[in-house]
Length: 160
Image 1 (cartoon, rainbow, N blue to C red):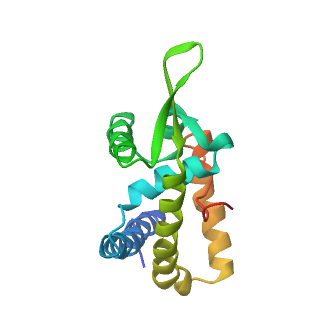
Image 2: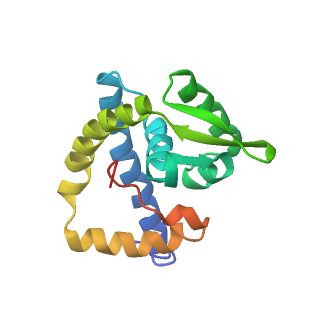
C-alpha cells in the first residue's frame, strides 16, 4: 500500500521496473548459457522479421526498438559483422540505408526465440492470468503509444 501522500501510480511504476528486471535478467543469463546473442539482438532481429520485405530503414528500426540512434548503429554494426543482417542502400537516397534480415539472421532469431520463450513462460506467463495480460496490454499499450507510432507493436514470436 502506498503512503498517504504517494499516488498509487508510483508503486505501480516501481513494480513495473522490478518485474522487468526480474524477467530480463534470467532471459539474458539463459541466452548466454545457450551461447546465443543478448536480448537486444533479438529485438533488432524480430523487428526486421516482422517488417515488410524483412527490412527497415535505420530510422524505422530506431522507432521499433528501445535504443538511441547511436546505440542502434553500433548494435547493427555488430549484428552485421555476424552476418545476421546486411545493410542495403536506399535508391535515390545516398545517405539512407535499409537493415535487411539475412537467412542466417532468421535462423538465429528462431534459436533465440526457443530460449526466450521458455524463460518468458517460466518467469512471466506462469505468474499472470489471461485477464492480467489483457489489462497489462491495455494500460501499458496506452503508455507505449505515446512514444512513437511503432512503439505499440508488441513483440511476438518470429514469423507470427
